[in-house]
Length: 171
Image (tube, rainbow, N blue to C red; front, side, top):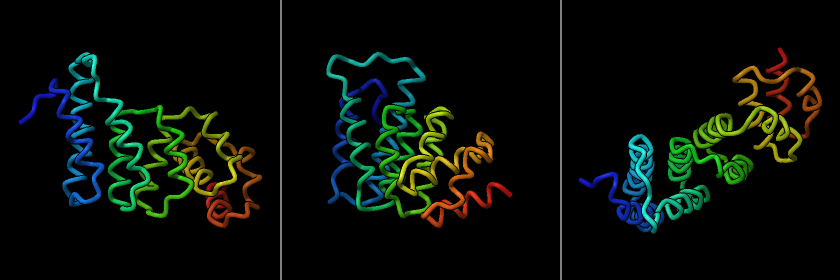
């Protein structure tokens, strides 16, 4: 059992999570442990040492957003969300733009909903990528933060999924 103030352990879990040769279940657990350890240290207000391993863990989680396996991408989103890594919003938007797994996409738009203010999310409605528009719309509709005027122009979107969601949201 490792202590939350043993910072070097994070490097081991980061390495384990990023190695594709490692079984998926082990990688998933390594990602979850990284998030848990971060939360424990935040709760205890521990100060990082000079050779702070957190940037390495954050870099690992960010890279895992492009993992071939949806389960790994989903766990990376969950960890980023749990760790409240708001600096990773651009990478989450990139993931929303290309994500095909519905569970991973669900976690992604929910993390974005919590990380970005309303006006920023409304600006994503102008993005050409349907995944980014969908992530913005879902979060805005979920919190009732959008007016019909904000989304009316998307009723004729070339992206069928966006146009359909707008129609449902306006009813």
